[in-house]
Amino acid sequence: MKFIDEATIQIHAGKGGDGVASFRREKYIPRGGPDGGDGGRGGSIFAVADRNINTLIDYRFARIHRARNGQNGQGSDRYGKSADDILLRMPVGTLIKDIHTGETVADLVRDQQKVLLAKGGNGGIGNLHFKSSTNRAPRQFTHGEPGQEFELKLELKVLADVGLLGMPNAGKSTLIRAVSAARPKVADYPFTTLHPNLGVVRVDHNRSFVMADIPGLIEGAAEGVGLGHRFLKHLARTRLILHVVDMMPPNEEIDLVHEAQALAQELQKYDETLYQKPRWMVLNKTDMMPAEKREEICRQFIGNLGWKGEYFIISALTGEGCKQLTYAIMEYLEKTMPPLEQDDTAQENELLNPC
Image (tube, rainbow, N blue to C red; front, top):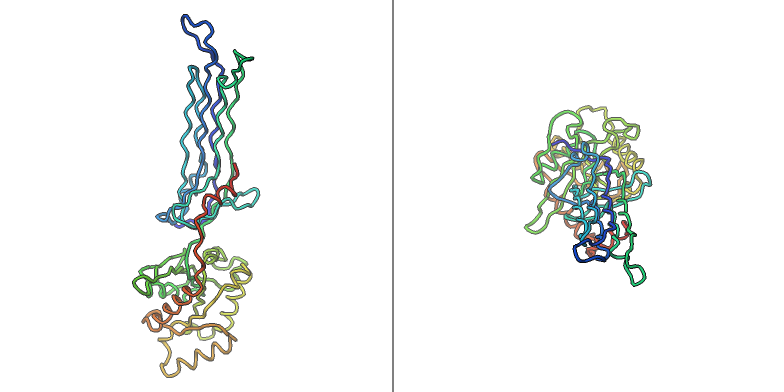
């Protein structure tokens, strides 16, 4: 299935049915009185987060979603039928924005989270409700209200605890294959990864975290070089970024320090908040180095880079150092675990969609 992480849709909630002005007409009942019923409510449109969906491809081609109108009221005290609501199932992690105002309508971060996007119109009132002691034969009725209409932008940001950042062919896909059951494509040419891949890393029986692999980033991405910044948004929800460095590039003239600094600058150009996220340096492909010089070469690189944070020496191909890395990540995530929040979906829904 093709991975689509952006889409634009139009939603139209249903109009409420009209009320009706009607009078009871039966034999031997000359003044039956008003009996016009109310119109039915128009269909509303909801977004529902579904963990079994991982792409917005359904909304790339089906752009217009229209709920049915409510049924008009009828005589003999018959009310119109309300229209069925529409449920738009989207991947967990979908951000929904109003295109014209730029406001965030909903952020689907929990499975089965349900948010109202467009409210259907209320039905009109029949003349049955206008009768009184002074108005025995009312002819008043009201029309149904129109439903809400919006043009929305859907943007998928994958939910992961850890994100992999690095140049093409740095070994990010090999790393996620080594520590999880994910099987992204691995090859000896740049930009093998064309869309994000997620893998669950199980450290222990009840201890695990989600790792995200995104396509490689190169210098000049802000100007659209390579795949540009398009996939960096998938790191926005992560709590830790692993900067993977290929310590044995195919071209000996490549300046690894300059590449690492350039990648950090591209991250900063895209989003300062993302740049400020905790970031660890992961020195990969060290199995290709002489064993006796491995530590010295890596320390020299870290010193020339001026890196003061955490760093790990691994080989994703042989698995050397990967276990220590995953245990360190798990300990960090457990220490920085945010407090559990109450499920306030209903409150958020009311704030975002006041009715």
